Image 1 (tube, rainbow, N blue to C red):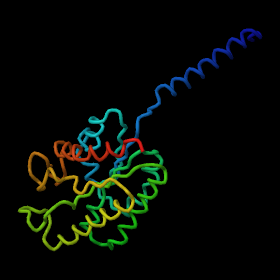
Image 2 (cartoon, rainbow, N blue to C red; image 1 turned 90 degrees about the horizontal axis):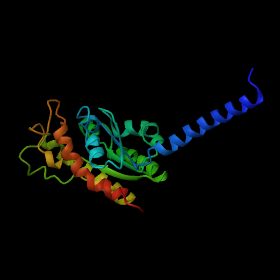
Image 3 (cartoon, rainbow, N blue to C red; image 1 turned 90 degrees about the vertical axis):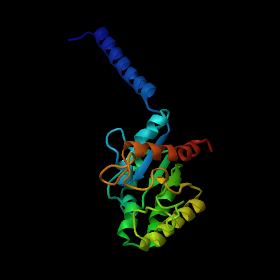
Image 4 (tube, rainbow, N blue to C red; image 1 turned 60 degrees about the vertical axis):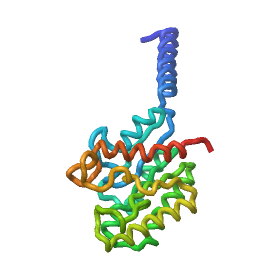
Length: 222
């Protein structure tokens, strides 16, 4: 059995170890600003180290960039998961890159999709995060382009999507990137697209470069 002095020494040693572990966690805690990229397959594509979020992380090593993209996701799908996948991470900036699947399905009203976007934007801003909306449909002359990835019967819908995003961003003072893919259009061409009709790592680098100034602006002190 340990005598009184040995017990005191042992307790002091354990206390020192606990204090050391706490100090280590404090010192090594990642204190970088957090950027969460909430999106669909255009956010999750690119493979290991080839997503646009991976490029952003390399371009901004002082920032922690988290990819919250899920292939096939929609505005209402993201609305169901954003509390767990975004709010719990306590982000400083949220990039919302959604709408492509909503566009292709064309099964819900623009008002309903606007409500999804507004609900998420309000929730992000409520915890102090700034929002950048990254669209796919703005700043394009669909009627004048020589190669558009969808038919003319959808040109009006694409225009409505861009107008809805722009109006929400104006009303809520969000950053707005009208078309994150503008530098790699048209679709399916080398060297920026893969065989699944998604940007490859080279394409995602261009997307990250297009996003970069918007995210940097959102990270500026208030």
